[in-house]
Amino acid sequence: MTNHSFFFYGFVLFGVILARYFLIAGGAYLLFYSVLGKSHSIRSLRLKPPMAGSIQRDVELSVLSAVVFAVCAALIISKYGLGVTLFYTDLHKYGLWYLGVSFVAVLILQDTYFYFIHRMFHHPLFFRWMHHGHHRSGEPTPWSSFAFDLPEAIIQALFFVGVIFLVPLHLITLVTVLMTMTVWAVLTHLGFEIFPSSSPRHWLGRWFIGPMHHLIHHRKYTVHYGLYFTFWDNLLGTQHPNYEDEFHL
Image (tube, rainbow, N blue to C red; front, top):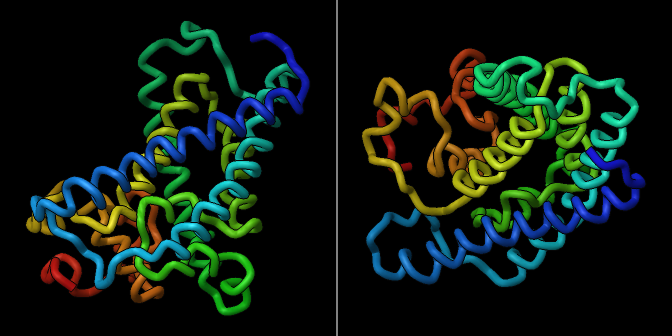
């Protein structure tokens, strides 16, 4: 890997992260709110149409979050050059099979980390200055997927700085996790249900968080804190009691 300055990495990665956000969130918004949504081919979950002011605020917070994530990503690459992390680029160091194992491991770790910090964000002592920005729009849209207050963005981004000291991660795995996180966040903030109504009762579907599951969190605040999986919500009693039986809430 070619060595560049911290500021070079930060600048380039900021552009990449911002482009990823606009392409995925913007593309989803265009597809669902301008094309599919008007054809009634899928079910809208929204109680009211999105407001331009809310979208603008979400985009502004997302740009700020992109700065934070770019700084942390630049830090990861800089630390790689010093050889003090478990980040690696040689595909054969652990074998190809390890790419899949480490990918799943990081998703599980991130989901666990996210669940507990998310519950913390909703504590009255922290909500107003750490998490209010994400809920300010009320009914979320794909633009809300990356809209974090500065303290929340820092805490979320620090997961990736920390995990490279705990789990050996190839560049491919790290990029795949980041893309999965982005796509999943856009999906859960979509405002449209793309899964079958039987999904919450299916043996597999009941363990994954979809648009309805997360929308309930935006409406009720005290339930559904997970990122990818419903495991911690089920285990710790923060799953909505009627979610699996009453898909339409």
